[in-house]
Length: 250
Image: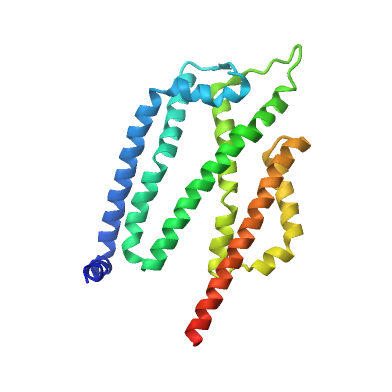
C-alpha cells in the first residue's frame, strides 16, 4: 500500500517538480565531483606517476607557464568524475526508479552495475595489456636527432582517450542486450552477420591501436569475445520473451 502511494505521488508531480528534483540531483553530483576533484588534486603526483608507470616513469615537459598546473587540475577532475561515478549513477537511478515497475527496477540496477563493471574492465585491460605495447611502438621511433618529448597536457589527453575508448568499447554486450530487449536486433541476425562484425572490429582495432599486428590482435580477440557474449545475451532475452508470450497465451 505504501509503495502504491509513493508511486502515485511520483506521477502526481508536475513537470516543473520533476525538473526541480533533477536539478537537485545534479547539484548533489556536482558537489561530489568537486570534493573528489579537490582530494584528487592533492594526489596529482601519484596519479601522474600511475599514468606514466607503463612507460618506465616517462619524463614529461610543459611549454607554457600554466600548462603543468592546469594539466594537474584536469587530471584531478577526470579522477574525481571516475571516483564518483557510482554515486552519480545512484542519484540518476534515484530520480527514475520511482516511475519504474519492480521488474524494470531490477533490470536497470543490473544494467548500471554491468556498465560500470565492463567500463573498468575495459580500462584495466587497456592500461595493463594494450597500452604498454602501444607506447612502446610509438617510442620505437626515437633515434639520434629524434628525441621523444611529450608535454604533460598532450600525454594526459592521449592516455585518457585511449583508456576511456576501451571502457566504452567494452559496453558492446550491454548494447546488444538493450537492442535485443526491444527487438531491434535478433541473435539470428548477429550470428549470420558475424563476418561483417569481424571486419568492423578489425577496422576499429586498426584505428584505436597502433599500426602493428600484435596490438591489433590484442584488441580484436576481446572484442570478438564481447561480441559473442552480446549474442548470447540477446538469445537469452529472446527465450525469456518467448516463455512470457507462451504464458500469456495459456
